[in-house]
Length: 110
Image (cartoon, rainbow, N blue to C red; front, top):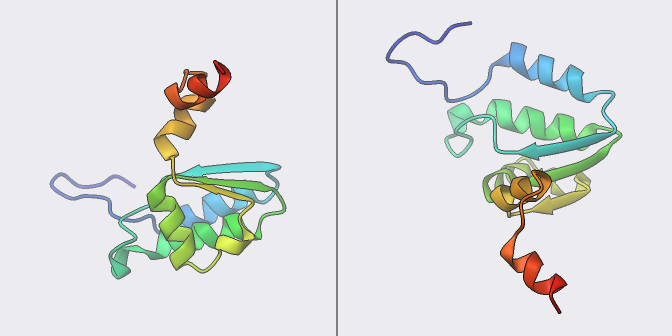
């Protein structure tokens, strides 16, 4: 659906949750970076928490990146079901893009 002018998307709805959840069912690896909405506000947390449960329930290697996503999976109560959690979301994405990270470069120079 289209978002009307002047409105803001603050969460995903049930249809989007279903689409994402179905897409995750057969995944072998899931990398999740960034919540689905403004999960800090209870009224807008449902989409993020539903996806957190879908990721946690997947038979896959599950990687969560970013401090906000870490907090979201924690609040959803599924942190223990995630394979790996990193609070460095932006840095993790840069690493996946093949960019050099100064901290890692310093380690490899020794």
